[in-house]
Image (tube, rainbow, N blue to C red; front, top):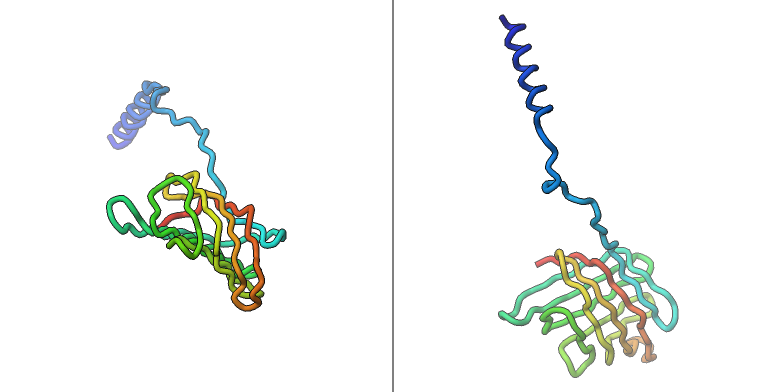
Length: 159
């Protein structure tokens, strides 16, 4: 009796599998490309790359938020870009007269942006990408430093 029931179950399973048709409307095409996280720039013409990066988004009101993007590296130091009135894609001016700011801290000192800009070109799937540049003065040496060709890609955003 037990063999008959097991045989019937096997026959039912085979019949079900064979009778199922593959529906093309339920097939998901595998054509999704992932952006790789990166954060790079040049400091006075020398390339610098950061190993770790993340962004924090804090809503301030219905139309604006504070966005802080931080990148670190054991060999380079840290860079932080702070956009106080972030409201989506576009250009944000950096400097002392505005609330938006950037700072680079490395073994040579701390450089606060006096002028520059950040252009956010992508903010989707909780990841942000953009380009930036700024000039500032090293607070320890009083020397003007240029940070340009800055680019960050697919930086994860936390709320």
